[in-house]
Amino acid sequence: MHDDTFTADAAPNRVSPSRELNKEVEFMATLWKARYAQRNQRMGRSIIRELLKLTLQPDVISFGGGLPAPEMFPVAECQEAACRVLTEQGANALQYGPTEGLPAVAPVRLRTNAALRHRR
Image 1 (cartoon, one colour):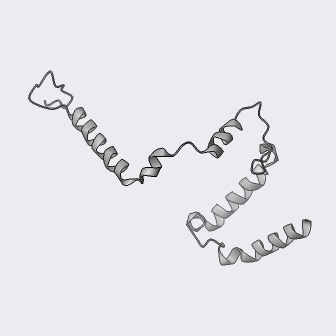
Image 2 (cartoon, one colour):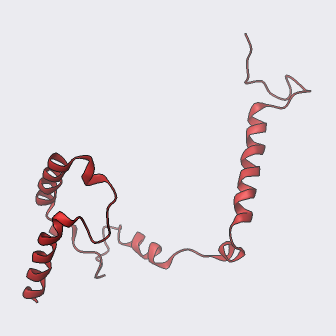
């Protein structure tokens, strides 16, 4: 029975498979690092990403425009709509499509936009 989990001590003339794998991983990492622009190595953390981390703290109330109160989300209505779309459209609903949406949905989108503009 052959065992591939040997160590360098057990077989001094052979290199451990894990050591070979580490060398391969290092080689791949070096290749990728060289492919990025030099300026990417000087990039710092995203300020927005760091700010969004703060909003996860329970004692923080965010007044940011893009972070509505989670309890205001219509979860039940979204769940019902998602189930209906997946039941009626199946895999087509999950496929990429045109940015402006599917032609069949255009009338609904236009009515929704008009209603939202009217509410202002």
